[in-house]
Length: 101
Image (cartoon, rainbow, N blue to C red; front, side):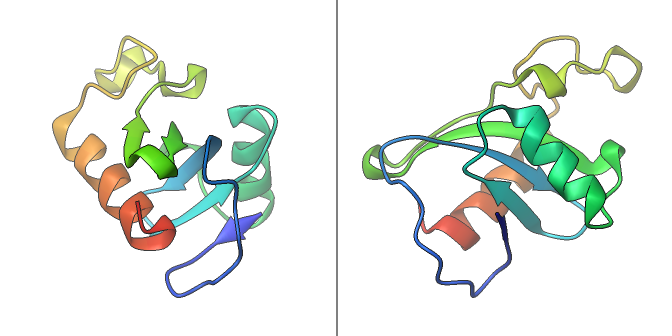
């Protein structure tokens, strides 16, 4: 499910996988795998280069910036965790704005 700022759709509050499009400021949530969310985003016009994965524990107010889709050695991100401060900050901002974490 793709969510934009201002959307009021309910998502699980205990744990949810999300993929954020840092260019468009939107996210896809409630997919089995981060790659499923990313595929949904690409099908709806997002570019892979702008997509980053995370896990959200809304009840705890916690964001875990880990996903296989984040491994991008050519862009300087060599692990599953988002290591690029500017990208991590953008992802966090979009998640907090849309999911009220």
